[in-house]
Amino acid sequence: MLRKLILASLLVCSLTSFVCFFTSYDAAPAQVRKIGNAREAVSLTDAAAFRTAADSFMDATVRETGFSGVVVLAKGGEIIFKRSCGFASLEPAVSNTLDTPFRIASLTKQFTAAAILHLEQCGRLSTADHVCKHLNAFCNEHNRNITIHHLLSHTSGLPRIPADAEGRTRWKTMSRAPTPLDDYVALASESRLLFEPGTEFKYSNFGYRVLSAVVVAVTGMPYAEYMDREVFGALALSDTGVARLESTARESRIADAIVCMTPGQGAKGYTKARLSRNFGTGFGSGGAFTTANDLLKWDRILAQDAYLDAKHKASLFQPVKDHYAYGWSVRQSKLNGKTYHVHNGANEGYVSRMMRVPEDDLVIIGLANIRRSDELSKAFKQFFQLCRSLPYREP
Image (cartoon, rainbow, N blue to C red; front, side):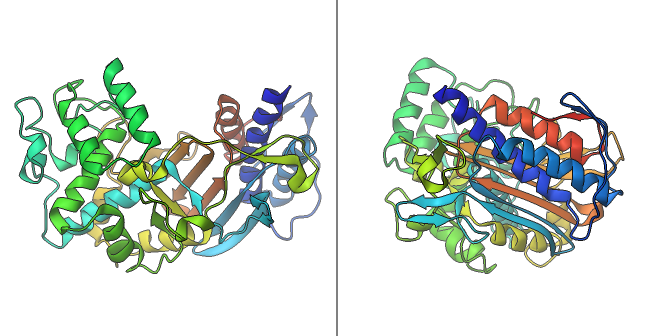
């Protein structure tokens, strides 16, 4: 029963989040045909019908579970819808807001990629550089052909995490305790490549931790410090940062990971999740935290050519293999032909998703301080079907 409640909490995060994305402020009531839990497609152009469908989807789940997180939809920089639910802290009870920092896991990769491209733009490195030029650990016979481009696009041949049993054990131990970046570089350099660099795609947290070390080698600054001063600070993303090995005062504001035990009971219905991870070990692959409001600012930065010029911004969103560019998955909708940029993030106790549709100047952000599950992934799929005017199912 407890497991079902926890999974239900995860489900409502997704449901509440993406129901809210396309609601209209002045939509009038409308009828939506229902057959069991199956629902016919509802066009987004019919604001009233879509709002009815979205509200129905949300109501069916909020009644039964709890959701902790924030969602926001903006078009052209103007917020169309925002919703904050649940709690950033239970003792004392502090509600989530658009200014609550959440750990964003793999959404960190887009910031690391942008930082690398900015360094290239400033002439301090080239994405064509062999990693060996900056890190001696990557001058071995088996990994000397890996370039920065390969790391950015997950085509280096490095595994997601160590592929062998001993390596996975080391990785798990390292993730639980303060572990210097150099230790991850050393472990990555020992790893057998899964394929010749540039020939295939394999999503790799290893690769983005190595990119963190490239930033250090080029700038002479610790990764977190460089990002705080030269990226987040320079761009006025004041509530965004990278977790340190030893937790800082800034990190105390991050929403606690919580679990919904009894829906409808307010803060009393939640309990704080037990976590074993040291989030400072995520570095450039998953160590960042941010707020919904800062991600809205970041979207506006990406919509312009101020931080990254047109050439380097194009590189950020140019797919290499398997739809992956640099820190973003870039796909073309089979429904309307529009290109969208998307990335998900999930680590112990947190779930995040950000999607941009440049043609419509639209951004959708969802941040939650709950755990990921298969049920959450299924819920996202149904919500995207609803939001893309496809038949869908309510839970």
